[in-house]
Image 1 (cartoon, chains in turn green, red):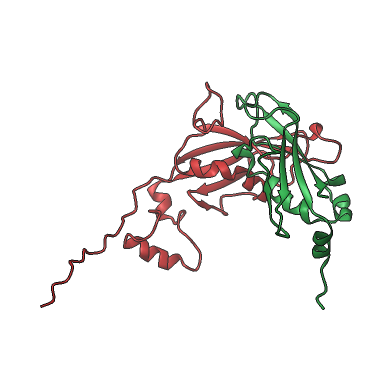
Image 2 (cartoon, chains in turn red, brown):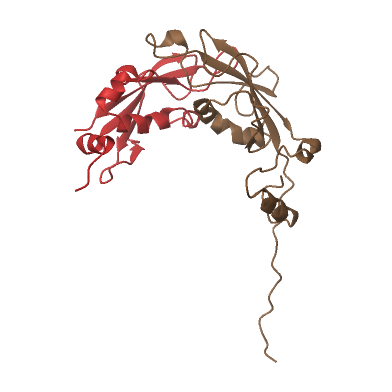
Length: 122
Length: 158
């Protein structure tokens, strides 16, 4: 009988949606307003795949696709509750990142801050 | 004699004589705290598609991912101004970019470290740099690639 590893057990037990929510704007941004969300849902019928849900999400700016949004998605979807609590930069299951715009006086557009967290899919 | 169909000699598609650019990221300002890999003046340098490890001081993987959407257009000659990386009245050849880390005071305590601001400049790669091997692939297939390039069968031109 195959012994399941921790991450396999975790995935069998729970699946997560990842939410990136705009919490702060430091200058003008033509795409996002505070409260806008990008939602990444697990794909039905596959144990590991996930995708941005266009119905629940604001438009996705091409310039934030390179940020750790993508790598933290996989991390958040595979970590146990204990691992999430103990990690340095993701304390209490939250990760903060911003878009790569510097804002004034360097660029006319300001930067947007996102709060990233996960929600269990029931 | 069999009358066969005339076969055209194989057309070899020659690579375009495209100019590649050197892209330089230089840490300009570390905002309000400590950034683990960068202090002011440290650089990351690309020659076209190749990241030059000798001229680069520190390589922060998350920062490189964040910069990735800009790198391709810059290495093909688009100016920072064309990509919106500077203001209207500033020098179009100098742009600015920050990493994804939120400035320290914008998050709850101990959820962030310092944000790094980088100055972005580009310039065409010179012939001397090509001759010095700055744009050459250094992997195990380097000789094979050089041979294919000589025959016009490799892309890009360097």
